[in-house]
Length: 159
Image 1: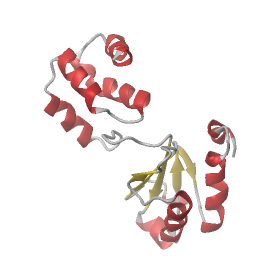
Image 2 (image 1 turned 135 degrees about the vertical axis):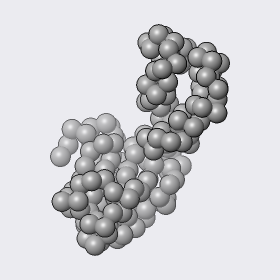
Image 3 (image 1 turned 30 degrees about the horizontal axis):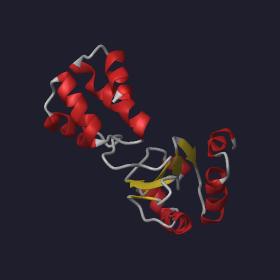
């Protein structure tokens, strides 16, 4: 709990900073673990139900463990008409998981969204905040290989 305690201290133990606190916890753990949320609830005297209500309201928060790399596939209209379904199928096959799941080694979590607001780049895949526009079934492997290689953090530096 030291890590969470230091996060609370950073925000002056102010209940008005609960979203920032939750964001920092998620960055530290890759999701919002129940025991950390219980601890925050007690320390800030915020009902746990309110914390869970915030966690479930904002799509950026996850109550389930996520992989090291978050892969998001847009299923919006522009992406759909440009064959994103095949792109998603290839990603699922390559990672061995379906949307909404995390790989057994906790390296990847695959999610879908209804729109990313980047229709000109359709179909679009986002990995760890990096946008890959005009993604095709043929270049899915090249994109994922950047994150599957040893030294996965190098993927952000590669184009």
